[in-house]
Image (cartoon, rainbow, N blue to C red):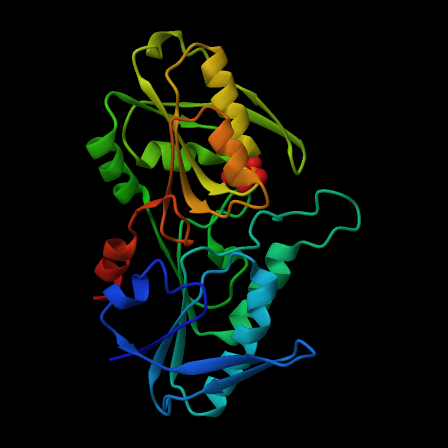
Length: 284
Ligand code: R5P
């Protein structure tokens, strides 16, 4: 049976506990000068290990992950799988402006050198069609859309799925309910313009916004605004990966959204959709 090592801030979604794998023990010490020391306390020699580490706030996690994986290999670990329910650094999938780094490629190259396999949920694949375009190790992409559809069936009467932008079509379609897709123009981190299609036929529906990432929440906020201006019912906002950067959560709460719901890919008080069942189906 593989040993699972759960990185800090990944305990709360309780995915690791529900997976019933043998838990491994390790410590991360921060020195006063902010350098990091990893100590792996469980014997990993000849063992398959799984690391549970979501890659939101990826810069703070990549060094501990690197120290951990290199040490595990030195100590004889046979195979290392990383479960990153959220895999960051995928949105910079081209050089949008002269001189910019294509961080998705650089990050993927680094991560591919650290672990043998990655399992993740609904990565932001837009210009890349699959993770294989940037990752050189096996990757498994799991989907949250069945769990989201289940939640909607239980909680929403007469739903209309609203994808805020072109990229969200993949999730809106997979939920298999009536849907519309808006268009989005982004001119800055917090500057987003949304144009809705004609919604006049859907006045008796409850709009359910579904997007993969809620970061600044401006995409959701502007879509909520436009739906309310079009006299639609107060929308429910569902984010697969709720990052909620800076004031995002407060602003989204103030926007007029009826409810804000996320999966437990990233721990947050809005987590209502559990991804463990999907993960278990795959791991068993
Ligand atoms: C990008 O196209 C993604 O699918 C999301 O729409 C985006 O990351 C949301 O970002 P924010 O919450 O900052 O508007």
